[in-house]
Amino acid sequence: MNWRKKLGEPQAYLYCLPALVPYTIFWLAPMGYVMYLSFMEWDFINPVKEFVGIENYVKLFQDQKFYKALRVSLLFALGNVIPCLAGGLLLALLLHSRIKGLAIYRTLIFLPWVTPMVAVSIVWAWIFEPRVGLANAVLEFFGFAGLEWTHSSKTALLAVLIVTVWKGLGWTMVFYLVALQNIPEHLYEAAMLEGANKFQQLIKITLPLVSPTTFFLFLITTIDSVQAYDQINVLTQGGPAGATRTLLYLYYESAFQRFEVGEASSVAVVMIVILAIISSLSMYVSRRRIHYV
Amino acid sequence: MNATAVLYKTKRWTFTAIKYVLVIAFCVIMAFPFFWMVSNALKTNDEIWAVPPVLWSADPSWSNFIEAWNAAPFGLYMFNSVFTATSIVVIQLINSSMISYALTHMRFPPGRFILVMIIVTYMLPVSATYLSGYVILSRMGLLDTYAGLIISNSVTIFGIFLLRQAFLQVPKEMVEAAKVDGCGHWRILWYIMVPLTRSTLIVMGLLSFIAMYNNYFWPMLITKNPKLQLVSAGLRSFFIEGGAYGLKWPLIMAASTFTILPLVILFLIAQKWLIKGVNSAQSINK
Image (cartoon, rainbow over all chains, first blue to last red):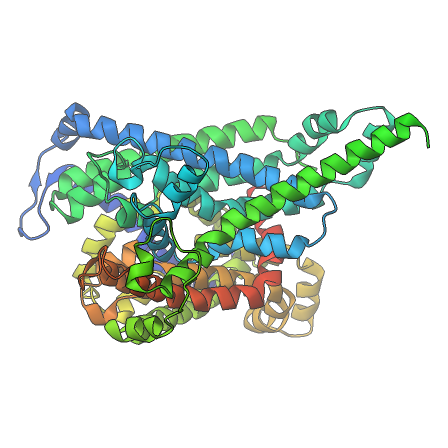
């Protein structure tokens, strides 16, 4: 009797199946399988996979390319997450403060998020064209020297980041807008009565009360940063000289261009482990430090 | 009026002015690439290489759009995208509703475990599984098929969260009352839960549709047949092949324009739903 209670209604299992079957085949199984493959040497074609133990990892951790990709990934994540969160909050604060034409601004700022990354990256590739592109025309108009953008290893990552942040900003802004609307007005009234100025109100009321949103957006944007592919593929293909080769791009190249399944799998496992650490750390921090209304 | 009042007013006015300047500057930056795309789609080959750049063509060549449309099978690409995205959304709406119902309104203790498992995998990079997913899909003989494209994308963890959250808001008493009246789970799900959470379902469908229409990396890996390409992959091949790289920029811009257009229209129609939906999406982490 007791175990029947624990198992619940038999019908519930049927209701879970249509989602859990594809979930198992295309999420769970590949997660396990990629870990298995990371101990193998294989090229997709050979009927026999050769077991090589931890050799793929040993090679990976001795490879300069891996450390470079790790650094690029980290820079990319920071360069995406920080501007998206700070910019999104700033925009939301500006739009939240009784402004005429809110709906128009919101639509314009959110629009890039809706459009295909490949298409807008192509448009940006043209904007970044060093000789006749718009970006350099603007820089030169303001008296700066033009840049090589995606053609130079110094600026390529910056170019990719500009596109990524441009596209992601509207998403974070909309989330912050909703969060700001949910803060009870009377908190600000009380603060004003006690003589707190706008800046103090921002630090003591707004920021703590939007912290659940910040946490949520931090997580989502970090996960997206690690997985950024489309814009890199269109704009730089990991180059020049590996300047935009993130871990994900390294994994893509070794899997689908060099067919080194084992090596690629070990990179995939490293990515999974890194995100698992980041996610659990931020969950842990959020449990202790985040204020819910 | 005394001096302090004047000072206060000037200060407030300055703040307002700065605010508007900032917001409008931001909007211009966000929207300008779209303007630039259309403007460059209309330029002649001379204008496009002009220094400094021409803002708007003196003689807009609207025929560029027709030429670009005919240069590659864009109609087919768009059909592929719309068809697979729609099928995926329909499947996702059904299977997410079912599992969310089981997780929220059925007596189902293992649901807790399923939920935690799903949350954990949500925080891991799904693209890390593309390599092994590719091998699995090829074993199933589903590479280069619509079925493969659709089935492999048929689960949305984000959607399940969103719906579960919405279903939790439906009072237990309502479900109990329906049960007393002799309704089975199936009827409760489709006649009570789904109509009550309509707005969340719409948002979820929209977000999924946008993501799937735009999808590039995974579909590109699992379809090599050019006839099965989605718009993003099709546009990218047009960009690279066809001698287009660096030569036919007006045509590339024209092609980008009509690739983006369906989504822009969809967004303008549906934006009030999308923005509403964010409200419910927020509570995922609670």
